[in-house]
Amino acid sequence: MLNDTRVTEFLLLGFPSLHHQERLMAIGLLALYLVTLGGNVLIISVVLAESKLYKPMYFFLCNLSCLEIFITTCIIPKAIGNLLTGRKAISYPGCLTQCYFYSLLGYIEFVLLAVMSYDRYVAICYPLQYAMVMSSQLCLQLLLGSWTAGFLATIVSTVLVAKMPFCNDNSIDHFFCDSMLLIKLCCAETQIVELITCMASSIIILDSLGMTAMSYLCIINTILRRPSASSQQKTFSTCSSNFTIVILGYGSCIFMYVQPSSHHISYNKAVALLNTVVTPLMSPFIFSLRNQLMKDAVKAGLKTSVIIFRKHFSV
Image (cartoon, rainbow, N blue to C red; front, side):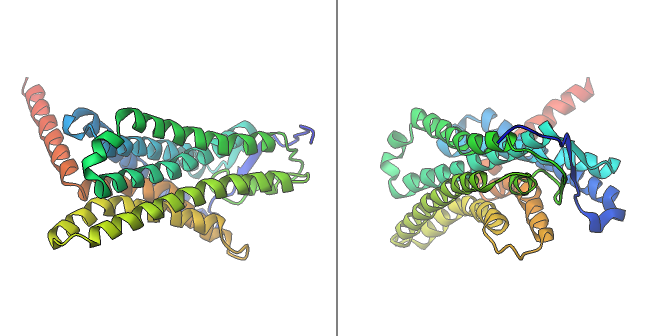
């Protein structure tokens, strides 16, 4: 395949049926984006500031919040700009970059969710060995492994797509550069690229989903063996936030990429909004509201901020 690219930019069609409401939609997306940034930055700040949260669970939670910020920032600002200006174009390098980082960050998040489920498995099923098993060194290795897996799953298909020629049609019926839609615009044989992309995504998604499912099955089995109902309820409450994010993340991606081709693209756009806006928005609230230690730390942080503000204002 020769790098005979004639297309210099792509057109992101976005939401043609909502043409007259684009300004209103841009304002709504901007509000959600700012709340998402604020919520996830708050979690990161609280975890870094509160020594009681220096534990593996909150270490991974902090990294998950970073990923949510990166994923949202990769997609939403460009979509807001297109809605406000009415100019749907994105440059060829910009489109490839958006494809790469969206896939990379998504794969990393899937592996990280599996790692978080393993952390909960060790904490609940082997509480006495938890501190020894989930050492700082292992946590760093698991995080590095997540980034490495995401990089390896993304880089090959991205390089192959970058070498593909795009000759005529440059319209992408989405609000961001989706890799599968981009591959369909290539004016050359795409079977190898599609196969590699499908294999990489299947390995990451199915393996991480299998590990997550096994971890939670073991957790549920352990919880049901406990005689105390209050202990069962407390443990279920601890895992419910992780489980909610797992359902939202895997459910949306399975709907978008593992479905009959007869499904309309508008459904994919709606689910993509769920995956790039709603899930990152809900993550900080789910983890904060379902975790007493996080709630106490947030309250303490807000109280300290108010005191500092009052002292500064009084001066």
